[in-house]
Length: 329
Length: 280
Image (tube, rainbow over the protein chains, first blue to last red):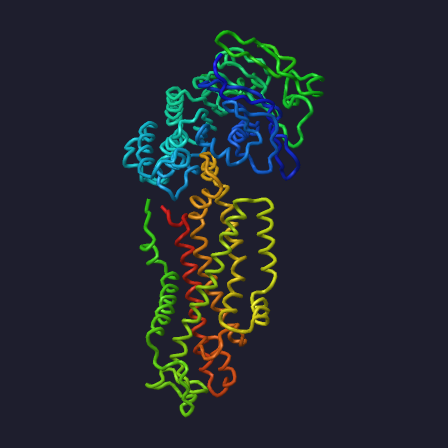
């Protein structure tokens, strides 16, 4: 049995909004082994980014968190801020979506890379700067030595994202969370950055939690995919399994809605009718019921349990689905 | 990308140049008066009272025969002193309070901001008069009164600007790197709101000079024989019809100092705005 890196159990997050209390996460459970790569997919507002923020302990102050999140066996829910500060950047790190705004415009980049090193490893300025150079070379920033003293506005988006990756990697974390790391980048740069993350994760044996709404991107990047909808995980399977057999009607809709090349001219793109449910006023049952072509009366009464589509195999994770009426197409 | 340093752009900014020159003149005359003035300010020369401008008395003399030019020069010390200390008090207490409110949120923020509202509720002049009623008139009391009025001004503007910085991604990124609120405040928040504070300090400086003049005019600020522009105005009032120029000189001095500081503040606001600095 491989060692468990992260174990999330029945994670619930409530957020105060202008219109009332929003149940943003409704019982998210999953676990990751050391060095495993996991993808989190879903549309805007389904709770992907919130899951990441909850893991990092960066939720808004008034958010209510319950359930359990264990990193290397240490409980994160309810942990005091000073202890969390020692974990953040050291044992778990995060790459943000917008490299344009996630770097402080007033500091040269080496200082920003050196920050976690000085904080967690008590390095002096000279030592941290030398390490920052090594890190910049590791993330393959061209002309790294000259760029140490550059300011963020002197770098392109892709280069800044490399700097962000260097910052995240600085202390050799066990868990790397990448929240849509390539959404803000040019298509040509996206692949390079992803390949880089992939390579670094493999070299260091880090666990990777990759968040995205891009299905194509998930296929090559992660071993296992979880599909989120309305604050819960609706389907979870090994990547190849999910791409081959999709059990949940939402996942099926999501895959059907992918634009593809080579369709005859004038073909309308498939969409999922309706819109994402309002988190302030979620239905008692399945959040997808109102948009679901297969919805039945019992879908609306209670949250369906996770059912097994395919049990855990010797090399593959179990295929689970949160739908009582699932069927493979 | 035409990115230029501060000084090349500052030199081409008309209101910054004009304001800067006036402020420089103010500071220079205060420095000069420390070393030299045409006559000692306390010198009373009754036979020569209310003299017109002449080679001996450049701007004439007042009702006690004191040299107006010397009084104006030495009075500038007073205005600068009040400005520096009152703004210093405001910055020293208001900025940490504002930063604290933005960093801690919750009840700390509520407490600080309601206290600021409370202080703000009293007009500055009124609280100054109240303080002088308790502690007696004098320069120190008026400086402290003006300084106290500056604290909520700086606390509010600091909190507002700091909150905007806190919501930026790089602060979230710094938290994700394991930084605590104090390190983030010092490393990220403070440097990013510095320009706002500099501009506000210039404007509060001008307000402090005006307030000191008003207090001295009311007889609550600087006491004789110290020279003060506000008191010169007060004393000139009784000779308004015989010697109107006695009121004009200190009035012009106050107006120029305030105008200069405000122009400089406006200029600084433009020059320190990063959006304008990175104009392409």
